[in-house]
Length: 113
Image 1 (cartoon, rainbow, N blue to C red):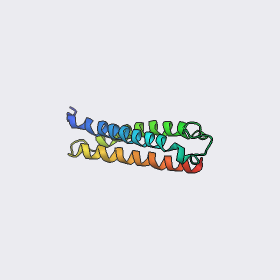
Image 2 (image 1 turned 30 degrees about the vertical axis):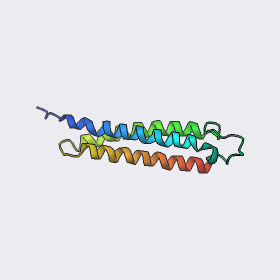
Image 3 (image 1 turned 180 degrees about the vertical axis):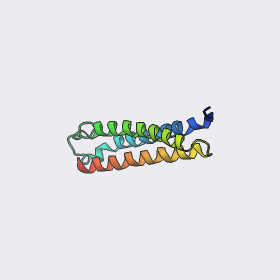
Image 4 (image 1 turned 90 degrees about the vertical axis):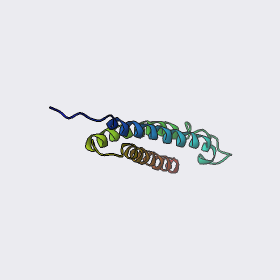
């Protein structure tokens, strides 16, 4: 007979997903607001992230992948640590790591393009 999983096993992936969504949205809209300065200054021809050589497209794709990755890693962590307390903390750590990876990707994209 299989052992019953507690309802807290769902907390880790859900918290990781929520934290990643919140972090990615804050970073994306913050970069959209700063795009004028990040894309060559106020006198630049293209001041939107979507026309700055595709930076906006890559930011959207990277954000989507960061959120999906946070959910998948949250599931893996929840399966590995079934009965231990701290599901919310682990979810926040997973979400924060994925948002940090998105931030690094954003910095690399703005520097390269």
